Amino acid sequence: PFLMQKGVHLIDGTIDLVVLTTEGIQLYDYKFSQATHSELQERYREQLHLYAEAIQRLFPTTPILSLNIIAISEKATQSVPIETDLII
Image (tube, rainbow, N blue to C red; front, side, top):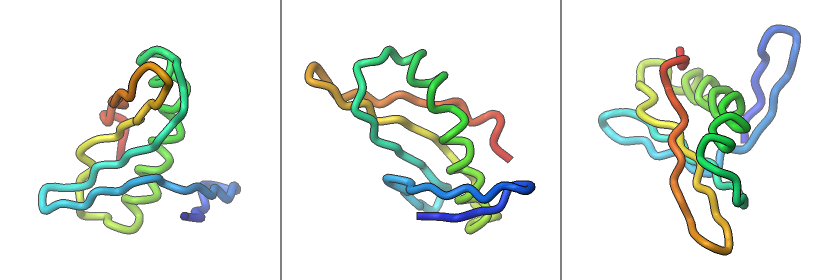
C-alpha cells in the first residue's frame, strides 16, 4: 500500500506485485477481466502510471522497466503491457 500527495490530492493504492532487480523495477497489477488488450491498456494506463510514480519516489535512481496488467478470466490469463514512455 502507498499514500502520496500529488498537487492538492492524496492518492492511495495497493500495487499487487513489484519486482526489483539489478536492472530495474517491474510493476504488475492483477485484474479479473475479459476485456481486450487495448481496452485494458486504456482503462488502467493512468492507474499504473500513478503506481510507477509512487515507486519512483521510493527508488528514485532505479528505472521502471515495465508496467503490466495480468488479466485473469475464465478463458485465459494474459499479460498486457502498458507503455512506459510517459514515466518520469
